[in-house]
Image 1 (cartoon, one colour):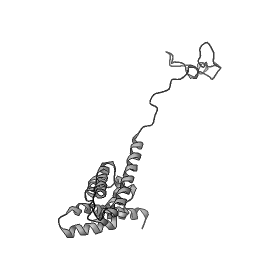
Image 2 (spheres, rainbow, N blue to C red):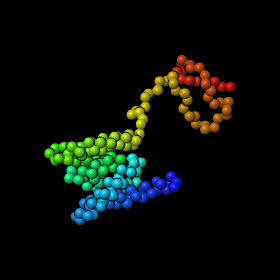
Image 3 (cartoon, rainbow, N blue to C red):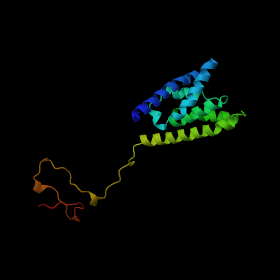
Length: 183
């Protein structure tokens, strides 16, 4: 199987598994259990490069499905969100972390490391994303000293003979500008 076919199959499996995220909230126990098993098996295959094609609705559903009562699926969801989540769900993950760390839930110790890892990854992604969108330039152009101005203002006539073009030459003290020499 070629690399393309392998990647296509992986994404196809993940797309089908991610469609099952909504079933985690289903009131039928069998449906929830089937979705959990499938997601626990397939979510570890998610990579940070998959962030661009994973649906926002699926990401939000993953964050809403987090619960301290179901450790394996919550850990799988947190690890997946660490790869494909963004700043939009960061507050939800922080809220979940506060909820489990403040409670005396017996599963809190199991979930806290995964939640902290997810928060760190999302914070790093948020910083990198903001930096990538920032145009780097000076806030103002520094004033140029007179002796560094290299060109004279444009003349009214747009055409010049090649003999009249500026050439490098010495600075003249009276003008304070670079004068060209004619050849």
